[in-house]
Amino acid sequence: MDVTLEGLTKRFGIQEVLRDVDLQFIGGEVTALLGPSGSGKTTLLNMIAGLVAPSKGRVLMGSRDVTALPIEARNVGYVFQSHALFPHLDVAGNVGFALRVRGVGRRERRRRTEEMLSFVDLPGFGVRAIETLSGGQRQRVAIARALAAEPAILLLDEPLSALDPELRARLRQELRALLERLRVPTVLVTHDRDDAFILADRVVLLHQGSILQQGAPEKVYRHPVSEEAARLLGAANRLPGNKLCRPEDLAIAAAGEQALVTMQVERVLFLGAHWRVTGRAPDGSPIIADLADAQGCAPGEALRLRLRVSPGQAADQPRVPILQF
Amino acid sequence: MRIAILAILAATLGLGLGLPVVFVLAASLHIDGQPGLTLENYADVLSSGYFMGAFGATLLFCSVTAAAGTLLALPCAWWIARGRTGARLLRVLCQVNFAFSGVVYGMLVVTLLGNAGVLALAEAWLLGTDATRGYVYTTGGLAIGYLGFQSPRAAILIAQAVERLDPQVLAAARVLGATSRQLAFLVLLPQLARPVAATFLAVATMSMASFGTALLIARSIEIFPVLIFREFIGFGEIGRAAAMGVLLAVCCIALEMAARRLAPGADASVARMERNR
Image 1 (spheres, rainbow over the protein chains, first blue to last red):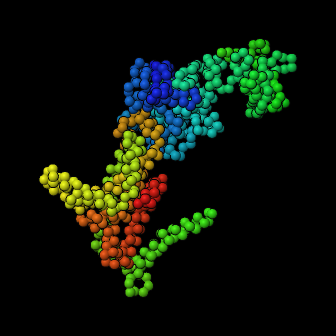
Image 2: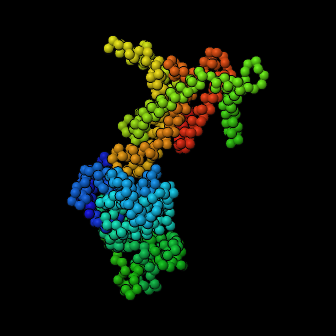
Image 3: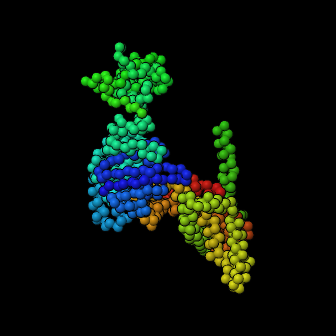
């Protein structure tokens, strides 16, 4: 079942947090709402769930208007940032909670709970207390709980925040594998570009309460519709001629090769897979270049940069089109 | 500097708490005119049907009123913790309660339900009856006096427990389909059970040890701390009064330890309440 948002607007007093948002979430597709703090992404998620009432607009589940329905009648699966598991219930009690409050019989509840725990690769965990679970296990229990009552849509609020980088990277992969198996529309909120790119089929960029752009991760990264959209997804360099390019699109120009820009190097950082060289263009605008090899570059030096090309491409056909606004 | 502060603290504690405790213990183990230490005062109290009856009655009365006071405090605590309209005023009113001694509560209830209390006079003027006249001196009147200081203190303690609840857990229950009733019975009350039980024990302990209200209005029931006061002031039975005090203290300490065991997080709150008593 698809979920559609029509002209959703939210005002808190005189402050407009969301403005005329139109979106459609399709069954089986994972959509990431990506934006900085205060862009309205969690408010949007809460309006879908019914936790926040819209000032204007409609939420449709299929063809049914659920805007006026109370939270408990919406049939929404929500995985909260803190997972919000019930500490007084064991894993099975948590997963079966939605069925319990719907009056589903004990036997059916147990069957469904076991099915959901198997789905999230936690078979036999039903009797475990919540405090004995690891962060990843808690997250999977929260997902199983949200899915147990077969919701019309699954919402995830910052599912990987507050985790250390190593665990975050591992859970990302686990979560991606889990979400790929779902048939309901899934919406996740994040301010982390990597989370959005790895987990989502579609990215919706939100900025100051409005949708800036939406599309496949690569499309919005490679073809941003504005400088704001470009910068929301990572660093971007402003080049002469009011053009933008990504740091990884720059390379050192060989002697005799025409340079796109000459940078006065300020800092050289080794980041493992590449070097990050930062400095300034002659007009003073900041430049960031991610280079495969920057040995020999030193602060204070002038570095001639060109656009990187893929093997077999001519130098005037860069791998990435320059973003021009 | 730290050593000086520790020395001042040790001296203050020693003089303010240790010394009186030593004196009371020594007095409880001594009988005038007899040399050495004896447990006779304790035996006297423990074998007395009158004293033990009063102790049991006090324990029962304080337990029942503490339970009622804790239950009455639940909606108020919820209101305060959720920051509903007037929550700040309600919190201030509950906190003001700490400033009043038991005697003040006794006087307030007398003013309200005494022989010449406001309610009694209003009833006589409006209806020509005297049903509420002197009600303050009944067990019901005493219970109202106790509830007056128990409920606000319980409300503050429970509000702190409610504030510690994860709001996302409550939202999760609603999103999962729980009605308000299901939310209360399946999520809220199970999570609040331990803090509520700890609050009940803390309030019961506080009531067991307070005597100001009872001193003014207890007529229908013997309140144990009032008996201690009478033994000490009225009859000059210092040894017996001290033994009774020690027994009451042991009971209160046991109750308080149970409260702390039930809700470790409530320790600070209970300690604060005890300090303010």
